[in-house]
Image 1 (cartoon, rainbow, N blue to C red):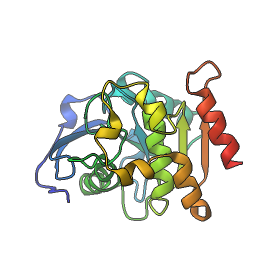
Image 2 (tube, helix red, strand yellow):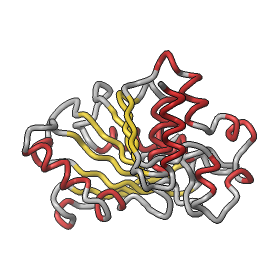
Image 3 (cartoon, rainbow, N blue to C red):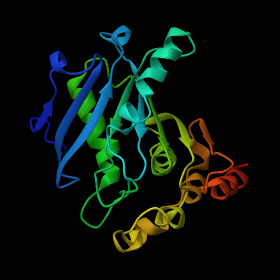
Length: 232
């Protein structure tokens, strides 16, 4: 479990408005993990604030959604247009194993538990806006889309909704992006339970609201079309 005193959080005087960086020790990672957080000024002090967790893709890290995709600027735009209410954005690293952890449990690091236990506990500890009544949503791109789909479905009691973009859907997809042999890093049980389809079928009676999309020229389009066909 997370040892909350072993964490470090940035000073708001020296960071961009609304942005916080958090470093925390995780027994699941056997070391430290990092999280970027964006809290809109208009949401500060709100109780039971909703939270969107954004998972990054291979080669990326916690900063990817802020400083490569500008997710916080999109949130502010949607809020200004009254298309979306206030949310906190929580953007964790994947655990920084190899080219990408897949947000899976590896032989010596549990990247899955890092996300669904440590990160959420730390956010609730450091931000009074997030409570046990806050609604939590999960989204991601590529490997992050895979993590959002698999974890969002598996931990349906935690997540109120799932959105995924150009998602990896199974280990075969994942292997095309990374140098490491992912199957050599995880248990047979994890391999068996790793596909999005496996989890969707296992928890079919408990699926949260779910959407996913993929560009028609994306190399993952056929995998996403197959997933769509299986879920219809």
